[in-house]
Each structure stands twice: as C-alpha cells, then as structure tokens.
Length: 281
Length: 299
Image 1 (cartoon, helix red, strand yellow):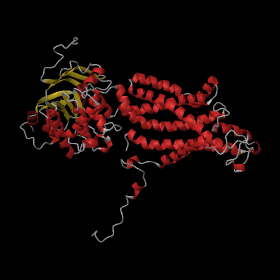
Image 2 (cartoon, one colour):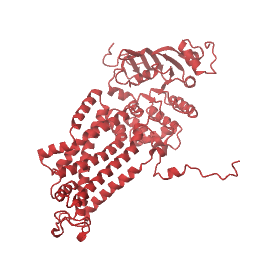
Image 3 (spheres, helix red, strand yellow):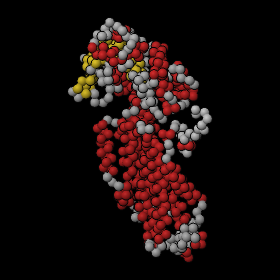
Image 4 (cartoon, chains in turn purple, brown):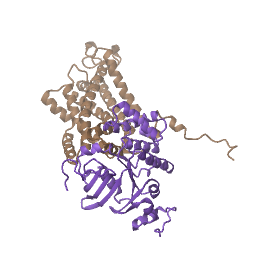
C-alpha cells in the first residue's frame, strides 16, 4: 500500500486525469461520514457533486483540498495530477505547496472568506507571491489588476485598494474567484459558491466561474444542492447520499433519467419544471 | 391625495447627524464613553507633556514658610504639602511617572502576552492547554503581590514596579488574545489562506494579528488603569517611586501624615488617580464597544 520513494508509475496520474479519489472514507470516532468514495475528474472536466446536507459532499471536497479538520480520520487515496503524493497523508508543508498553486477554492460565504483587515489587491497578490508564480511584487500587482478585470470588476485599480467591507457580496465572490484562479490551478473546487448570493448575482458568478476556469484550463469540482446550477455549469454529476456516491453519469442522463431513489427525491424537491424525463414519476 | 398635504419632515435624518465619522454605517457607532475617556486621557498626557517645559514651581523646591498652605497662597494654585512643595507642580510631574509606568508595564504585557495568546489559539489542543494552565497559575498572583515579591528581592523602585506590574498583566492578555485568535481561526478567510498555501507563521502575522489588534488595544487601556492603580499602591507602600520622583501614590502616602488636619494634601493626588483610572477605563470600554462587535460577528 505504501508508495515507494520516487515517482512510481501509480503515483502520477495519466496526462488526461486531474484528480483521482480512490476508496476515500472519513470517520469521526466510530461514525463513518464518508464511505468508500471513488471518482475521477478529467482534465478541464466540470464535475458536479450534489446531495442533501450531511451527505458528506463538503467533507469529500475538504479531503480533496487536504483541509480535513483535526479529529477526523481519512483513509484511501486522493491524488492530484503529477504531484505524486497522497493528499490524505502528505505533510502539511507539502500540502501548502500544492494548495493555491495546483488547487483553488471558492467558498460558500463571500462575506467571511476575505480578511477584513487587508486590502483586496493584497489578498489576490498574496497567493501569487506565496507560490512565486510572479517574479516580483510589481508583476504580481499588475497580474492582480488583470485578474480583477477578468472577472468583470469595475475600476480594478481602485477596487484593489479597497477593503472587503466596501464591496458587495457578488463583488467579493468575484475576488475570491480571482484568488482561486490566480495561479492557473489544475482543479478549482467550488463549495456552494452561489448559495449566499442573491438570485440576480448568482447567474453572473456562475458564468464567470465557468468562463474563467475554462480560460485557465482548470477542471471544476462543483459542490451544490441546486440542480439548476448543476445543469448550467457541469458536464458530469456525482450524487452523494449518506456518505456514499449513489449515482454518477452525464448531467443530462442523471437529471432526465435518475436511477437512484435519492436522486429522484432531490429532483422532486427541486421541482425542476424543465426536467420531464421518463424516470420522474 | 398626498399632494396637497404638507408632508411632515422625515424623522430619520436627525439621528445619524450626531454621530462622528462612521464610513461603514451605524453599526460602528462610536459611544460617548470613548470621547469622555479619550478627553480625560488626553488631558493627562497634555499635562505630563507640559511638565517637561513648565511647572508653576520646581516640584522639589520647598517653600518652608508656606507649609501646608491652602490653595491660592503665594501663587500655589492647589496649596503646598507638609514640606512646602507646590502640589500642582508635583501632580504635573507625577503624571509623567504614572504614564511612564503604564506605558512600560502595558508594553511588556502586550509584547509578551499577545504572541503567546496567538500561539495558544493556533497550536494543537495539548500545547494550548499547557499554556493556559500555566497562565492560570500566573493569574493567581495579583499584580500587587507580584510587585511586593519583586520589591523584596530587588528593592523597591519604579523600574521594579513596572516590570512586576507588566508581568502580572501578561495572563490577562494571553487569555483575551487567545479567545480572539480562536474566533479568527474559525473564520473562512483563515481557511482561505490555508487553501492559498499559507502556513502557520504567515497566517498569524497577516490574518490573525491584524484582526485581534482591536482586542490588544482594548486590553491595553484596561491594563493601563490597573497599572496606574498598582503603581500608586506601590508608591504608597514605599516600594515604588523614590523620594525624588514625584508620584501620585507617593504624594498620597506623604499626605497621610497630615491627615486629617490637612486633608487637601491627600485629596488632590487621590482625585488625580481616580480621574486617570476612570479615564482609561472609559476609554477601554468605549474601544471595546467599537471593536468587539465586529470581532464577535455581531452587528
């Protein structure tokens, strides 16, 4: 089971696979929270992960980001592109070198995801300077302005000098997205990125996530319980229920012809008027 | 139908006008306590600064003819003490000692307590527990007892008093800063910093410290009030300022010999101490109102 020193063939994923999760289980005490979850994400593939609250989707994504809270035990393997390490067992030092550079993350609550005492521009350039992906502070600053402009933020120059409380929720979420994609990561993890936003802003942020992740050629792991969002953004869908993946497939197939009882329940709860497949009762 | 009716002026605009600069809206309302406390502290600082350039008399000059003089005698604004020294001048120079002791002891406490508090809030539970229990032990020693111990060992002086008061105030800092740190550590932006690849020290410096700085300021002003009291008490007991260093606590002690015949000699320094402690406490409360709600996430 333990990997040998050096890049053994199994450690480095094939060129076309960005993420491979094999037999991931997370337990707290004796209680299993995530059980034997396995899936793969291809290069530039956009995968949705849906399920009710408590189905283990956020824990799965935390495990993928190497951010499981203390007190939880995870077994299995999570491998990212050519990093050659199991993210579940890698040292904090190793993980810190991967996070932000190879993976980016957008959080649910944009109000708290930015440091209130630091200017927005500094928070964006921090992630580039940390991983030395820009040669100098000046270059990082220029890149910051470009990134802010790329997510359609007005007056990036002025905005970079503002503090988070001076921005609206939608603007903050765009800043968070800029940070997540600053280093062109292999994988962008979005944890319900539109749940806290109002409806008019949701569509814009979703469009930007799709556009920008495609522009920097990053794959997408999109966690949500909003099926309409999944339909709009994702290629493939994983359905989680009680810590297991109960169904997966192309978005259109899963939404129009759900196989598992829980998926049907989700669809029924969402009252998606547009979905009128043969599977729905 | 509303067109002809004279519309009474809306009632809301009057309210925000009384507030000071509040760029982010009414939830950062500045309480009047802050202004009152700030004014008192400002006055004391001003008096201390002026004493460097000018005092009505040389505070150590003894006007033997006018001992225990009532206020207003021979140019002595607040009268003289039993040696004939000008009380107003002594108070002015005493303000220096008071502020000096406060700054140094609170500085010691903040410089030691803040980093330890942040470490205690960020480290693994076991180590954090160890730090907190050690803090509790230190907390069991009141500032005054600590100062007495130090004075017994190294002799009473302003320096000993400052260091003792400073060390005795460290636990309060550790506890307050640790709880603030725990709050900050649970915020998403710390998680975001970890996602960005940031590690312990960088998170502490860039994310935790700036966000607990408000608490440091609040705790400092509260600690300052305690330090003033402790210094006064120590000088009163003869373990603080020496005979040639004017100090409010020492004035109180010296005035005791004339009590109750000449109550004013003790009353003036007592009033000064009360005013200073009140000022710093009000300032601390006002700052707490200003900074705490944001840190607690209440708004």
